[in-house]
Structures are given as C-alpha cells and as structure tokens.
Image 1 (cartoon, rainbow, N blue to C red):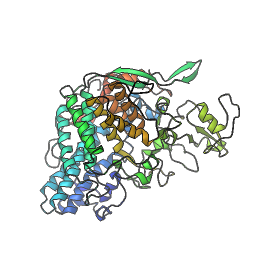
Image 2: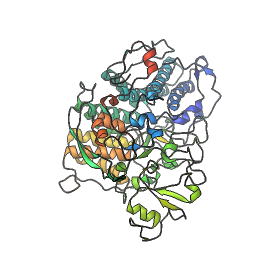
Image 3: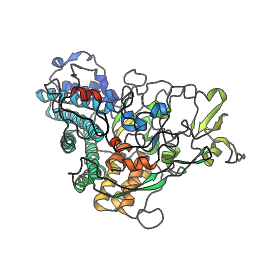
Image 4: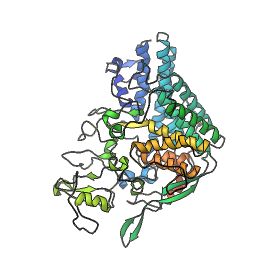
Length: 588
C-alpha cells in the first residue's frame, strides 16, 4: 500500500460513484479543492463531506481505466469473448502478462486506506452537527466494508488495516483469518446501516449511500457466509458441454442439468451456516417486506436500464459517470454493448464481452424481457458496413425469419421485421463475434464517444430480494414468502412464474428452489459482477466450470483447477509486505 491522501481530489469525484445523478445539493458542485491539504479542510459539516468525497474518489479510481469490472467479472461459466479480450482473466490465466486480478487487492486497499484517513479526521471534528457527523462516518465505513468484501471473496485471508498509512499504520500487516475479516466487515456495516440516513430522511442527499444500501450489503455478506459454510447440499445448474461436432461444424447444444454436490468453502468451516442464513433472512425481510431501511422497490423493466430508472428506489449503490469526461467518463460499457459511429461498431469500439449461448437459452425469449429487450439481437460492425450487411443473434430459425424473412432451409416465408427491415442483409454465425450482448448499458448521452455516462449497478434491490428468497428457503424450506420474492423478479420481466407442487415445471423440494434462485441470479444479474462469486460461495465453481469441458462455443478456455478458487496475491505486495511470505496455493 502506498502512502497517499496528501491532497484531497476535486469534490466532483463523487459524481463517479453516485447512486443518482439527480438533485445533488450545492456542496456537490465543483469547487476549487484540487490542491487542498488536510490542514486546510475546515472543521464543519462541509469539511466532513469533503473527507467523505475523498473516500468515494477511491472507489471512482477503480473504474477509471477499465480495470474494474473486468477483474471481478470475466471468470465464470456464462461470460465469454475473443482471445484478445479473454486470453488472460477469462481463460483462467490469473498471472498473465497484465496481472488482471491485481486491482481487486491494490485498489480495494487504496479505498480502505482513504477511508481510514477520512475517519481519523472526521472523528476529531467538534464543529459538525452530531447527526451529520454520524452519517459521514457511516458512509466511510460502508465504503471500507465494500473494499474488504471484494478482497476477502477473491483472496481469502487478508490483512486488516484499522488506520491509514499517514497515521502511522505499519503497511507490513499479516493476513488475518477469513473469520476475523468478516467480523470487521460486519462491524463496519452494522454501524453504517444504523447511522446512515434513509432515502426517506429529509437530510438524505441523492448521490450518496443510504441505510438501505448498507443493510443490503450486510444481508449479502450474511448470505455469502451462510452458503460458503454450508457443509453439503445438492444444486442443479444448467450448463454442460456447449457443442458437438458434425464433421468440422459446431452444433450448439441445449444446456443440460448438471447436478453438483456442493463443497464447504475453505476458511468458512467455523461459521454456522444456519445462523448466518437466519441473519440474512431476517435482515433482507426488514428491507424487502417491512421497509425498515427506506423506500426501495423493484421498478418497471421498461425503465430499469434507462436514465429515468437510475434512482435510489432500486439502485442502492451504483457507478454514475460523466459523458465525455477524460477521467469520469465510463470505459467499461464499450466492451458490453459497443460504440456506435455512423450506425456501426467501429474497429476497437468494443462489443467484445458477451454471454454464452447456454446463458441465453435459460430464458423463454417469447416472453422474458431480459431476453427480448435485454439482449442485442441486431448489430453492425465496421467491416460489415461497406457491404450493407449486419448480424443477428441468436442463430436459430425464429430469429432468422425475423432478420431475413427466410426459414432454416432458406425458403422465403415473409419479410424482415423491425429493426431488420432497413435494407441491410443480415446473417448470423457461431464465432466469437456472435454472442449475447446485453443492452443494460446502452442508454447513454452519446454512444459514439469512448467515455460516456453509462451507469453500472454495484448493488441492486433485486439482489437483496433474491437473497431473501434464498435465505428464507434455506431456513424455512419451501414457503410462500420465498416463492413470492422469487416470482416478483420474474414477474417484473414477464417471465413465467414458478409454483410449488409436483406438476411439470413446479418446484418440489428445497433443493429445487435453491437451484432456481441461483439460476435466476445468473439471468437477472448478468454482467453485474456476481456470477463468479455465486459459484465460489456455493462451493460449485470447479464442478460447473469443468462441466463445460475444456473450451466453450468460441474456444475460450473454461477448464479450472483448485488454484483458481482464490486469486494470486500481487507480486509487488509479496515483495514489499514482509508479513506475507507466500502466495495462495498454486500461484507463484
């Protein structure tokens, strides 16, 4: 960890990590604070806010140069892309030439160090109003807890820093057991949820975390511990071998049910799974059912991914960005949905991170809006534009008819329908350029530029609804409350709702419901940096990944070993931190 925080960055840094861009108070306006040192920050509510903004700026740094979310997103069963984009992290090469996982450790601890420095100065203040000071310290604790949660999930045992390097904390700290790290996270989040403003409080400022965000994060921590410490259990995941060969032609398969006997996650053995699932259930119920932490809800799918939906009702905690800004403009979005210049995706303009055919086939794409509107079915790349051609997805007869007016045998059965009726000739294929690309991040002010104002959710209300369903089922077995929570997510996107019973398609057992929730999370939270961590916490990562075989549909390596359960500690940390003498198992 480097010595830092000599200067507080410009207060506009908060704009990158706001939960909403609307109705910011005056203190969020840009002010000439770029060269203010800590002795010049006044002892006041505004001064406390400046220290909070300095901590938020540590979070914004994570997403400035495309390091996040790549380092927490690209390694799972359903994401894929060309070798140049997935040849390292996405192929299990965690110690490649660019060490793509390293920012989780480095930038996570940078965020924590900023938070420790900010806490030190705010705690000393005597001229702040007591309630405002409580809220600021709770914001800082939330951000520190977020940093630790990223790190402990990825690396396991890790150092705990209770003060900043500036305040004399020795950077040579040993790794602490997972139990101690989670105890620290839980302490931080309990303080945060009990002291943050709710989004219904008159003093709450849009653009800052609230009590609902802290409670939701704590429920997620409890559920993570609950699932990871569960010693055994059956989970059914849809996946398996992605294709067969007919000669040299790949024939895509339908996902098969892979029955996995979960493993208890190493380091979680001393936790009581039932205790932590009870905590997750009760806290999630207080958020979802009893509304004890503010006014949060599922908003309509039609506005969920629009600018009009980027509010604190569903998006507890999100990355907001500034269109055209060289530092605060988002880069991540291009990989998922591509720039559009003159009607096409230019070379180097992204559209490289997609989801596999097996993921798309989880949906009923006749009714589920997450497949109908949530996936790009039409796109044109620069090399296609001069020829008046384009691509459609998926490569099946239904979409071929829509895109070309021809059936599987190339018989004309009608005319192309919108948006394919634009005079271009559309085709599809099975290569690395024909994937399920999400539309979540397409509503931006200017899709032609590199850095724009795309929004990335870091924690959504839908996540805690599914946590409630999961935890309720684990503690109480099949029950109507858990079913309603699960169905509320499906109902929002017009997916067919589940029933409990013994008819075809019904959920008959606790294990059926558990599996349905895990699958729902894969569909609902796709490309929101959750899938790897769900597989890891459930102790099914290796089985699910290796059930794919050696490679997926486009030859991305999916074979994994036990060493992939944890990220390798960065080499420069091993060289400089004398208290850490060895890397995680299997890594140099």
